[in-house]
Length: 422
Ligand code: HAM
Image 1 (cartoon, rainbow, N blue to C red):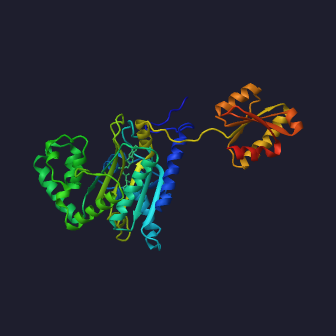
Image 2: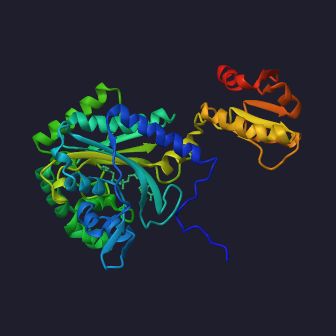
Image 3: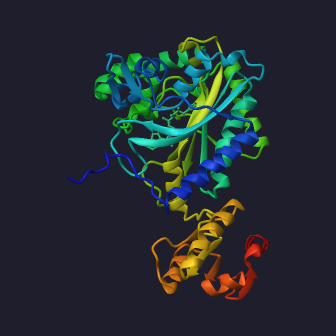
């Protein structure tokens, strides 16, 4: 019987995986510059964490979690996102007691959501995310947004659109919530059953409904920006001022609602503006979650972060036709003729590698010509040819595959010669 990969998952094979490594390395380097430190949390957590953290009324918790009972009957869930786990670790490991605050963390790892797979939407996908926990300074909002934008720009994406909104503080949200209920209640029976539940649970999410998105009441719904109190307004203005000052363009979109319950104040998404990008254009989403640390059992602590999937980033690269500067290929391929020479290449190969070169040889007893073909396939910069005769003379012939020139070098000088030329 032949097995098939589960729906909505991917094998990332050599040839493709180099892109992932490049993006992940770029993200790590960027986090180092911005002073975010890596956190690695478990792939699974107690279900209750996500129910509480992500929110009971969200699609994620209601329909998309991979939840099962372990052998002792505990309810376990494969993490659908990284914020709840990061905040759990922050609280459980008392990171709020560290001398350096805010606590700035990042993660790269697989997340799981039982969604209908389509282009850009998987059941297992890899998120890169950051969380800055412990500061209420709008400068940190601007920093987090700048980090996300800079990652996309560093890999060569240009057609990006940043949209931001403010969901305000608790008071602003309560006022807006009441206005939304008053707005939708009289005609709520025209909406889908999910929205009917959302009316009391979290009416903001009606604005984000995929089924009812064309209903006329959505157009005329009360906008959160009109309900911001003075503090929330000032906060949002400051975020915008900082973004402008650091040269990040954005649009304010009062209808931006994020699909998770924990947000307040700043919410943002980065979209691909590229033609040919699929129906799902959101590359990245994030925002502030000032009540979450408390919800998860910690002290009152503000936080903000974002997450983006590598899958969608790669899709955006393809849509824009961006080639990543990947260095594949080997520095030197060793070709041998004769038994003694072949034995010697085993030692030489190891020496080359220990000297930091990418080196390869043949392991299939191929003829000379076929070994050269292999060197080509490995995209070799240099080919070093050793025959039994050269071995006696203690030399090796090095061919520069770019210029075609060839030179004999003593065996002791092989490494230094190549290092100099590369
Ligand atoms: P989210 O909007 O649910 O937010 O997901 C963030 C990003 O993850 C999306 O913009 C998209 O790039 C990617 N993503 C989500 N679902 C899928 C999928 N099925 N297939 C491929 N990519 C997907 C969060 O997860 C929040 N935890 C973000 C956050 C961090 N907010 C504050 N801190």
